[in-house]
Image 1: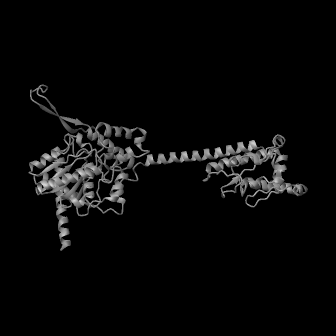
Image 2: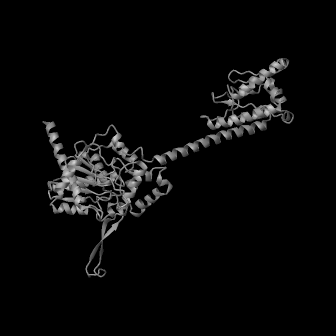
Image 3: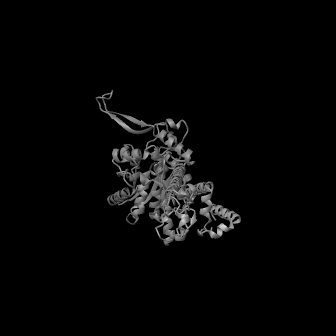
Length: 518
């Protein structure tokens, strides 16, 4: 029973006790509300006591407003002459005061039924409210007041619900902004459908140490294809040193000339054609090493076209690749994230699409949402040997001043002081930028990263993972720092060690398959 109904019932019992004769002569007014019958007393009570009428009206309006703000349902319009549509259909009874008795003779039947909103006591039919033999008591109700109150109550209800919806939207947006990619980082490791990884760090360090002492074991029976990452078309030294080093050892090595700013699926198709062309020309299988997005592109080529490539590919190494996604891409492109507040998403779109004539999908494909969708449909084949290499960037104050060699600037003879063409190194603070990004990821998510890819997202399920303790940022694999300690190995030696480990894993897998066949 509602609060107003209980008040009315109490008042009815008081009047019955004090004036029983008046009860017998009154025309009954039946209001259906949880079994309550007031026998026509309420109009007379509130007409003779204006103060009670004002208080009841105030209580009714206050209750209706609060109900509209916090209820989970909305008040529906009831057609004229039709029954109530359900339990949510309710009715507001406005009681006349002495001042309005003589001034208004508007009948309830003249009030449009679609303007009357039911808010306090359940009603079964509009005709029940205005019965003919009750006309003396009800026709004094002010139609204008009822309409105004109804409109005010509906507006209050709508305003309250709109306010709650807006407040909830702000809460959800704030939560998305604060959480960011916290629930997505490392999702590959939490997915029960993904195979476990194997730690190959110790064997990698042994191979790297042998390479630094002049022991090279890469076979020339395969062709090595290096797949660069995002923005490689604008990096003149991308993988150049590694290719030169391999060529000096007599190994066939190529750098894939793909449009790195294209989508993953487009690059996967181009790599498939690239691999087939190399195989047909050399009759040697191809061993792939992809860095950053290049590793994702290469893995997609094997996942999508393995039936065509299974006899042409010897293995895949992914170095610092966002195989599971990267928080940088997700935080830039996801709605409600940092990119929304400082227009980074728009600036990134202008940079990729307008300045370098790329495809925005190149970055979108590296978000967690896109990687989930792709890997759900396309897994790496179990028979292909895979090595994944992940690193952690240093974030010490000294690293924030690190410069990387990214290109050569060649001066013509007339400009050069010696009268001959001269090449000077072009350096950029890439190491400092990677350190700053790694520090941001560490502070916000508590995750270690190379500056762009978290360590957990770079580990490919089912692969042999290399986790060096050495601090290496994302750009180091391509643009080594000028103050780097070369005694621990340069980028070309690290790539050689990764591919040597991949050759060993491939030989082991071939032996296992041969044993199963026997």
